[in-house]
Length: 332
Image (cartoon, rainbow, N blue to C red; front, side):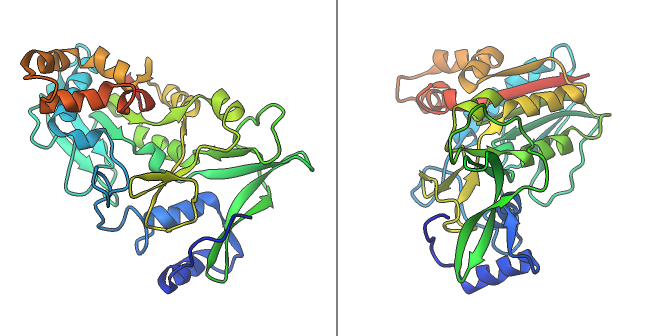
């Protein structure tokens, strides 16, 4: 059991009970679907300004760096298209924050630009560049904990005790969705990003659309997830601070876990995408957006130049350059 968390409001208590629908607990991925996407209390459903550097924001990411990021993405996508005419392709951004998009005001060579936001109809044109930034790690995940005394993995659910949310380890009814770690220690946690795979499958369907898939996100290889992360990778972001109290502030903090790159790359291959390109954000931008980067250096008025500062945040390993990775592939 986890320590007692802040008591739920009456509204959230009733909402959780309604979601339980007579059950005693719900699986973690369903709990995350509730706290992140419920129409009444969901984190991504409220009008809060979530992303940015102000104290009341919860986190910031590459898309907050404005025109610099947008121009880098335009050049990268154009280069990923190779010899294909970008004027024949629609740039589709999935999961942009309300009221904004990566290519707002950015000159680009694409046939048109579309944005698919939460709740929008998912319709991919026949020739498309599908782009997202930290979309896949915003999907629900499951949690599993190893119990050494019975040498087995239990699935973690969430239950309500009075006005408190609590974690509850339950015996599984289904096989593990991942190959378990070798010789796990007692209490080993695996946060399995099942929702990211579901979203990928949705993005890649139907198989008739051709073009580029490009996403930037946080993830790890399967062997690292299984062998080197005994405390799991799930975390919350609340007012610019990262925490491990996932049951606190439901609907008011962002909850996420690291992706498993292996299952996403397998999904791309199974859907006819080739080749697979994955590297740190720093390396990706230096390789696929070199002209725009060189232009920033040529035009820079010094180390405090706004574009130079933005570029530094995007590619410097101490900032966003190393932790975030770019995954790209094509299907023509």
